[in-house]
Image (cartoon, rainbow, N blue to C red; front, side, top):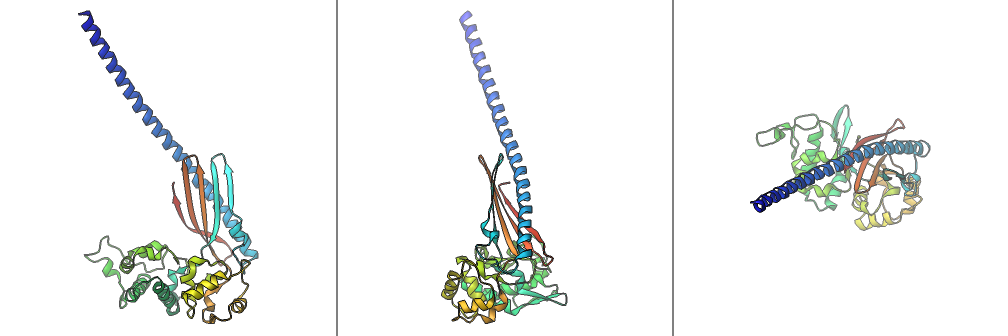
Length: 321
């Protein structure tokens, strides 16, 4: 009997030890999870505070540069080469300003006349050429143009290939929505247009943007190899290879005016596109990243320098926080 009793006691003790070990492991795992969660929340808070602080520095940097030099912004301008770099006890922060003006502003398809948005034929032609360079079918391009104009204008009359409220709110449409009757605030708003979905969103991942105005221009001094199709669309009478040549031969120190541009490329007819060409920028992207141990966060802040000589954050995208 004594041996049987001892056996029962031993088994009971082992079961208790096993149970306590399981409880300890569970508590330890929960503690570790809670600890990592607390670390992430702290990292998230720190990231947001640091990003907003550097945004303030970037706004001041842009304001100071453009108040004293608003005529020429070349690739070697201090705005673009003097990057932000800070090492703190909470990680390493890196940041840089990028000229974001070299893209087709979707809001430039219309122009504001007497308080109403009307089609801008010249800019629409540039838009069509750009999509053709991207191998988009011409018939679909007409649908895109009409649907964009119908989305922006305030009337309820659909264009030939356009769509007004009754399409988006009809029984086959889910979710129900209305046309904007305003300019676009974000490029992603284009996804609501059927013609855009038909083309594929990947087509608009490069060379297209949205600015809070109806202007269409580019800074010829900061164009690069990603802008070949855009340049060939802006300059109506040049080919794709001509656009490559122009981009490859823009001097690092920049071009001062349109006369110098014409002298640099005398063989090309660029006079008709004079209104699209600028030599400085008012639109920027601030790209930031923070890394600490196993945590990484980054952000992209779009900055617009307004007519009142002040710069503003018009949108932010965060990742990792």
